[in-house]
Image 1 (cartoon, rainbow, N blue to C red):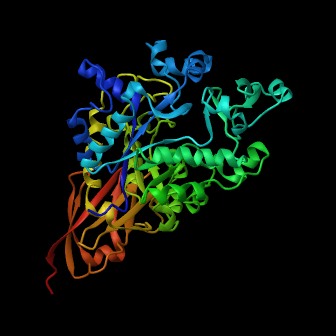
Image 2 (image 1 turned 180 degrees about the vertical axis):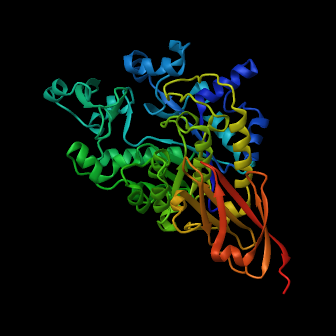
Image 3 (image 1 turned 60 degrees about the horizontal axis):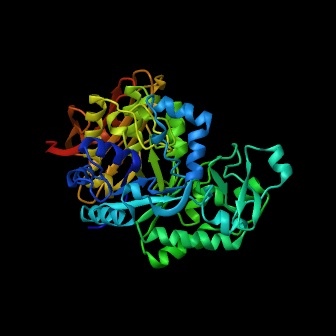
Length: 497
């Protein structure tokens, strides 16, 4: 079976997931002992990738920071009112070693899990954190030169960005990992990409990870770009990603790289070898409810769009159900997941979870599923399993005014999908808080002289339409606020002459 052009990825918070499965089973569940039915369900839903968040070891020093930081503790208690210190296991991005945490079953359990996924046609993605390590990574002792070093003056002036670390070469002042817009993460230390030996060591880490999975999600990937690193630290490193990605693919053909990317650097990272980059701009435009800006976003070429990861939530963003009111949540999901690119879903999204789980915690709040959201995503995932949406061709449909003087056409976002086997679909969303009308001139060949049934795959509507009318003046659409249709075009009787 050929790989889909437009795959789907499901992000799982591994520690919280296994904790819940253990509670439900009444005994410890590791990656090796996840029930077959659970994996069967992941395959049934149509995912191609499972991203296991936070499988690597977090050290005691970084965990102690998580347990002692007052601001973080307040965040943890908001997410988990009955928090205990045992629930705080340290950030999954403060990594002390790329070794599978023994609490999750260790390296053998991960290998068994990957094999079981593969049997079901699923590929495994894991984390790579290029920018920083935990406070107690072995390199802090043996290779302090791998880190950005500070001074007494820097520590005094910016205590939030530097700390004192004991190394095998004596005490050093090292920088906390950070991006240039925010204070440092106090449970991490910043790696120095201007040191060629550090780059070589990071490539070796990537090689180790690549033996254990089929792809990596690279945390804050743009921070390793030379121009960003120089702006942040005043040092000019050689490019890291092109050589690192090429080295992995030399040994692991087809290995996939997903970049967490911001600041309009997605194209740059794609050119450096990434298969996919986060599409944060689409997410932001959906939150701002700017239909015109969303349509403009989809005017980019497919050489760019096909390599964007479209999402409504992830472990960093608020829960979609918490920031998108119910009708708008559904409209945003239709826009997002029927666009080209990698379809990126997050654990808890399908149930309408409201509480984001901090990556420092091993446990999530227990929330009752929202039956309406569950039913909606069941239908959405079933539609996405259609071959046309996985392997077909996508076209934007520019909405047209329904009649002169009616500006509501500007609130619509619409696409067409087609495949060589004859599959033809129309996706249309009124992305506004009021009723709207438009015309859609469908871009399919061979419509004139025939009739078509338009069957809504996300609802119950069925319409009979003349094919010529679908081309000129176009399919008439009248939708309420945040409403949508996902029409399948089925040929009906020929028009008699």
